[in-house]
Length: 365
Ligand SMILES: [Ca+2]
Ligand SMILES: [Ca+2]
Image (tube, rainbow, N blue to C red; front, top):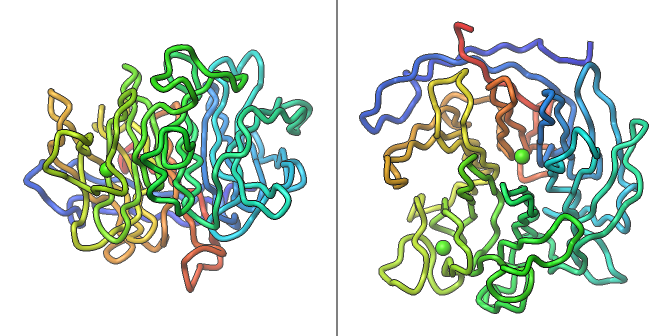
């Protein structure tokens, strides 16, 4: 039995939540769905509920009736696993059920140069085949590689790119780092992109979360430098400020974040998803996780789309034994999957079962 459903930990959400006056939503439980992983970086579900996920060391796996490793490091051309780089973003084609195409964003070597790239594969006979590099020579570094992927309702692929430690170039619309990029699934540039290249929005630092709501609104998370992690609503051609401003800025030049966190220290917000299922009473909430603080948040919006309130559901310093949290993904059945990031990452003491993928369900269902 590959499912390590050994540990079942019941959390009392109402005891541990940091209250902003909201009603308690009651209890949920956490099952360890998979263990013994190494930085499961991005998760994605096909419509039939099969889980696909990457590990940063270069593994890509599928979990349906059974767990199957579809690809290892040599599958990805010149894969560069170092620092925060490696195999990262994953997205399934909008027509995945018919064409079995999937897309990854990974760090690579080009000679002695560090780059990132986006490649497309076909899933065939329990492996990934026919690598097609659709966007190459993206800026790369030991960290600040971005690399989250999301398909929009326009069927175009959106890519978050870190500025690869070239902060001033985040403002340069001809440089592809520090940007949200938008391409067609064959790598070509849509005619209605705002600057005639792949750039969709700019002034980003290291965006680590990217998710569309079903109405087409695009949300993004971004690590602040030492302060001011951000949740942003991404709009065509907009400037999100880095490195001129971080967090809330008293200016009309830069797009204000939907929510800026922690003016005194960062918690490194990473994976993001929007809850649009009905297993939990959290419809329309933004779900996101943090690496440094090991937190899992849900954030409620007002009718007008502005920030209403948030709740911390897991916190490594309060109620969570799971350490750093990397990605969150809502499954088609409405349960919530969270991946940890402790092995060969910035955690001094990974547990014997790390890394793990967790599954959250309501306690009474
Ligand atoms: Ca994901
Ligand atoms: Ca900003």
